[in-house]
Image (cartoon, rainbow, N blue to C red):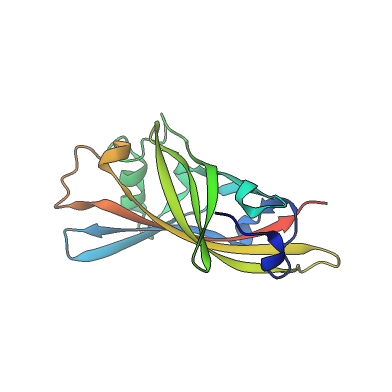
Length: 182
């Protein structure tokens, strides 16, 4: 099922570059089963290509694993170590779309996430924020928010860390603004 572009106000066909300054990539994981620890990645980029038919659109993104920030330097060191992300061996996380579907008033972005050297299918529940004018004259931006949940075990992240210490489930949230390329 696909949505014709005429149903989306301001829909613009084109290639968009993710604006990391006005975007964020965050995650939440339970610690000791009682609290949530939040973190973010500070270095990422990618491209959105909006096609005439939104179902034919694509997204590619790359996150620099070393840029993790949990607001605690010691924890960041542990997360980037071989115990979890192993950034020396796996410096990036990548996402590539396999398809986009209408999901009620929102969208489902099906794709493949590569994390810790393992590639698995994931679906992002996405909300289109809209299309509009950018900060510079003649520029256009698009906003998209998306969430998903992944399993540490499926990506072999922190295999030696018991789930009683750090939960298996990791919630990921993306708030993306991208600018239309000239």
